[in-house]
Image (cartoon, rainbow, N blue to C red; front, side, top):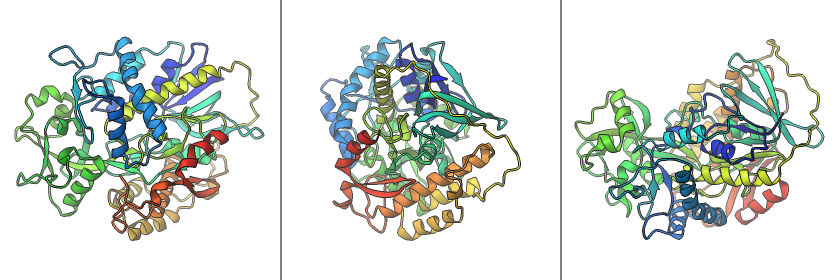
Length: 528
């Protein structure tokens, strides 16, 4: 029995755990190990307006512009205003950020930023440094349980409050944990696509859990594809940080001709959806794409993580060019939450990439993701600390089954699902291709399982069920939004539509709703 159950172990989860009252009994439970998450893999850094001449107002403007003015402006304002304070708190707690020759914080440049404002650690190993720091400062009495597949949220039969979770260990044995609050911090959906920068364990589980529990899910069509993943011999092998282009690297064809010249005012540092679309079209034309790093002095020292990744994958840096391709990177949509992470299900919260906080709009600004995790982790901690509950909670009787006689439903092959999502719901979408995908997904009807216990199913079956469920949410939203906006590129609707700019596509077990933007957060606050 816990005060707080935190599902996930990334930056939002650990920031929350670090700021919760020491009176809380806390469980952190994670699908793989506590280091197997996207936060740990993050290279670029944290965006924050701390440089000379920079202001949160400028950071706000860049964020809104990159997100195609589709954000909740109040949330963006709060995010950028808190940025400098969050950096200062990390410094005071002992995190050693990179510094320049004058001993000041070294600030990097990334796409769609108007100036240098990216704080980083270890060159291009910011995520690793921050996560090691947050893990090292955790209270010793916090329970951390690894290698558990959380497959169901426990909803009280009469109060309809979320009161716990069901999980399976590596051998498929069932476990139950109960708590006053359950927080989903499980990352995004990269594992649904064949080409991704994400950790392989990140496959939309949090969104599937929330959807099955009755929560609202929003904006699933807005999926950011990072322009530069290391691409060698037909396979991708990790992210090449945007910070490399921030230091002057250029995207080129085999001949050395610039790809982004004349395509956007910021050229190689254009917003990610624009660069990714250009590179995707190059790949469609069977042209190789490279990142020219010849102008960067001491590349190996500035980018040790990328250097090691290239070397381990047989890519030589002697020619000063790195082969790249775009791949799935970040979900802007997710579980509908209010300003402190409350969902539309009582007792259930969501933070980090699993949640749709409204700060990213249609396309996330580079290095705002770690900032978002830090900000909402602390905001939710402050909220829960004010709501401290110590009383005992009634736990309804039930007995999880461990039977092995269950009939396994028809589900797709995992790799085939990933390949079809990349082909038909990837960087550039069309009505005809989305219909092909929709029809294929419809062959696998998961609806019979929506209200039934999943206790008897294997981890592999549950993972496929969740992937199928989230794939359908993405496909439905992508079909419905008949415009191109940010990371949602429709070849058959190539322009932004003013009317669609006022609409969120909200999905739940009750159905699909076109929700006016100005009403969304008000409704969540009422429901939560």
